[in-house]
Length: 218
Image 1 (cartoon, one colour):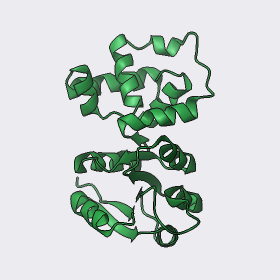
Image 2: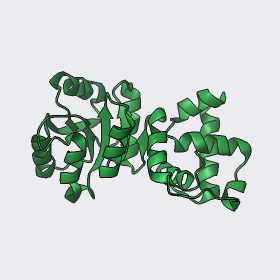
Image 3: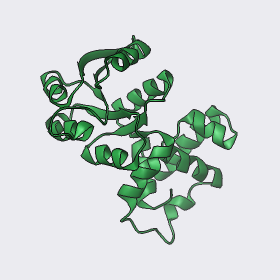
């Protein structure tokens, strides 16, 4: 059965970048809105809320808050729309600011078209998505007040290899990146992830990331 195109909005102040993203994602997404500044973004997103918003972090307009300001002013549509930050910046303060404001993920603009497609699908399905090197910023910011467990019966359910896979997946690595890191096949990674989620009674990567962060395992 053919999957329905995911409705998205592209919020970025560079016309050429927006055009390039549209071209790389066609035809399986339906771009229903575009904007290049904070005020226009807030207006178009309220007029026709998409499933996923690709949101630049730094843009003109509004009170100068950029992507985080757009998120703050769109809290009322958060129930039907998910936000994925897409930026040239990999600064910790930018990552943490937009995640605190409500973004479901953060990827950098050097991402490939295939990786961006996967990130949009995952965010649309409810997962949290981060470029691997950025996941640590989020875990540090949101897991800092969690005390490390001295012993964890749930962790003991996982084999050593499953624990390795769990940590990488929770940090935001793709299956392909995990396979490359551990020198195993993508199919083996899929098998391990299924086992980890089953043993921990979790249903998504987002829940796994929170589970690992709460235990200071990353």
